[in-house]
Structures are given as structure tokens and as C-alpha cells.
Image (spheres, rainbow, N blue to C red):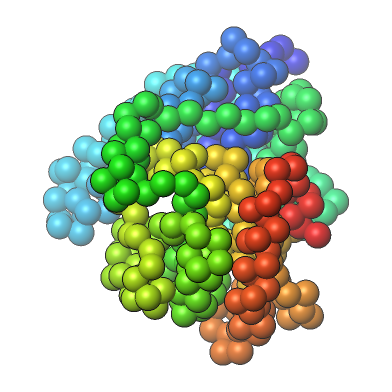
Length: 361
């Protein structure tokens, strides 16, 4: 089969899942250096992808614009946004369309695209019967394979080397200038740690106690002497201010950031502490030493991929699970402040490369 010259990658969201798709796309780029690679994505992570040299074109599905138009009964604008998107999606006749997302929406987009080969996951990994849309289906023996390794299966199917490549993400210099100016204005000097206790609304059940994060901040301040930044995103500032109070006002609220600016911030700090979120994965790709507090999430599938990563979790019979209504939350409540702080001390003193395989132990 001839080498593909035009490749469409589909991974719509979210931040963490998009990042765990990046090594596979880099592997495809390394295999087909002259190919034109487009990436179909939605949301703010497109801002980060648009700056990467292993992608030639970013196609953004304007979900928010379309939804807002129809909610306002502006049918003309909604249809204009949708037809404009479809036109851009069909502008290139692709040799390969690789759907890494595996849901019905991404599968429909793969069908709307023009192309010869449609590749996606088989029934084991695909959701919502999306596997029925693909001409070539990728299967494996292990349902609990890490998402980075899972995505590499598609790259390998296309002929890429099975070795997971090193990934270097880039953002413009002005992102670093923005962060440096913030550090200077706040009088922040090294060491600087970042704490991110938040998650998406749907992932609220994965959050460790806000009070315990407050205790961690106090301990970092008192026993390490590091300044602590509280990271926050859209809709999280009030909770961030509450955490600031719980820490005894010993921390600093971070400046507002988009995804590239947040990446620049994570490149500037000395340690990251948080739960299983997209920001955790971004910190790992920024090669930032991190300690992640995992509760119900399956660590074998979602552990941070990168260097200098430590995962704190409890090996319980009921974990992992997806019970968002769990009242006990033993997997999180049994994780103590001292345990997390000890991990922070150990990770802060390490310079060796641990990698995500060790983090899953």
C-alpha cells in the first residue's frame, strides 16, 4: 500500500485525551515526513495544537458557536457556521482518516470527510457503536491499555515504529513573556510550586478534598519554603479564592491563562500537584515534576505520561470505578495529607526520569 500523503487525525477533546494522542501523531509524522497532516479538534486545546510543527493544519469544530446560535434561534448563523465547517472539512481528499476519538460524533465527521481509508478502534475501545463506521478497525488484547499506548496502535497500523517518540511541545515567546511578567509583578522567585485541585464538572467526583489541598499548601510554604500558585480556569476562580483562604493566604492566585500560556507557566514552575485532569497531563508534557492524586480513575489507562511523575492512589477492590454518586469516596478520603506531602518531598528531590509506566505501579 503506498505511503499516505494527506492524513486527517480526529481527536476532538478533551485536553488530556488530545495530549495523549500527540505521541502517536508525532510517530506518524516521523514515519511520513512529507505528508500533510490535518487535525480535527474542538475547544481551547486547538490553540495549543496550532503552534506544533508536526501538524500542518488545525480544523476546529465550532461547537460553541453553533450551539450558541441555535440557542438564540439564529438559524441562519448556526447553519452558516455548520456549513462553513463542513466545507473546510471536505476541502482535502485524504489518503487516510484516523479517528482516535471513537465516539459517534467523531465517526460521523470521519464519514463527512473525503478520503480513501477510514481507520478507528474496534469494539473494545470504540464507544456508541462508532466502530461500525470504519473500514479498518484496530483491536488489542488488553482493554486497560494506557491511552498513549492505545493510540500508538493506530500509528503502528499505518507503519510507524512501535517505540513511543519523545515529544516537545512549543508555544510562542509571548506566552513566556506573559508568565514572566506575572511572576515579576507578584515577586515570585524560585522555587515555585503549582497546585490545581480542580476538574471539569463531570469530573467533580475525582477531586480530593479542598481543605487537604489547603493543608498541603501550608506545608509546602512552611517546610520547603516554596511559593505556591493556585491554578484555576473558567468557572473556578471562586473556589480558588476559597482555597487561598484555606491555605491561610500563603499562596498566590495564578493569572488567567489560555492553554499555550498555561503550558508556558508549567514550564516555569518547579513542581505541580493536582488530581487527574487535563492540566496534569499538560504538566507532564511540560516535563514538570508532578505528584498526582488519583481516586476512582483507572491509573493504568490515565496515568500522566512523562518524566518525573508520581501517582498517589489506594489499591481498593472498588477502584477503579465510574460511580459519580459514590457517597463513601474511600479511594480519595483514605489518602492523607502527610502521604501526599512525603511524595512531594521525594519527587522534588528526584532528577531521574520515572516515566508513566512506573507511575502506574
